[in-house]
Image 1 (cartoon, rainbow, N blue to C red):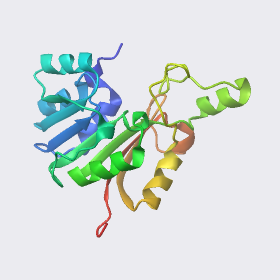
Image 2 (image 1 turned 180 degrees about the horizontal axis):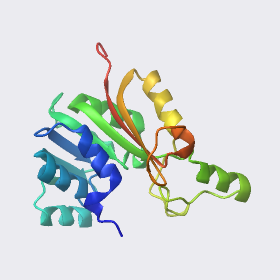
Image 3 (image 1 turned 90 degrees about the horizontal axis):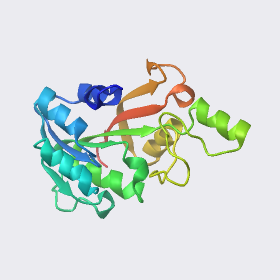
Image 4 (image 1 turned 30 degrees about the horizontal axis):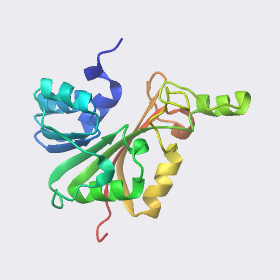
Length: 201
């Protein structure tokens, strides 16, 4: 099994971050990405995580992680207090997407979002041919145990950004065999986006 620190989505996210930046990782889990950013990119990092066992794992790595619910907001942080806020595989698990993203864009100069693409062709085939909730590499849970509250596609996220005046600065797509460039809404299992507020918003 591939070590967590070498996951492709982590490497892509690390490539989007300027060395020495300040980073807030929302829903940081066991801290694999945060640890990588501090070690390899010289980032000044902090995490927020709701699962206590995951926090213990982070503390064992020497990470600064606070216990908190992303849906409760980031009111304790002033505007632009971090260079980057990261929501990797956590946006689809929050109850209220719009306020969480708005607060992330307020606190971070830039925000990195990564999420599983529900419109991947394997998910479409399972729905169409089997008539059942899909289980894929990027959506590995049965319907009754999934932590995901929202099932969005890459096209859905682009539409959301246009509607909410959010600038998509960069995007990367991960498929079955690595990065992909063509037809991401069909072939990408995961989308990763670097976003920011439009000027004047």
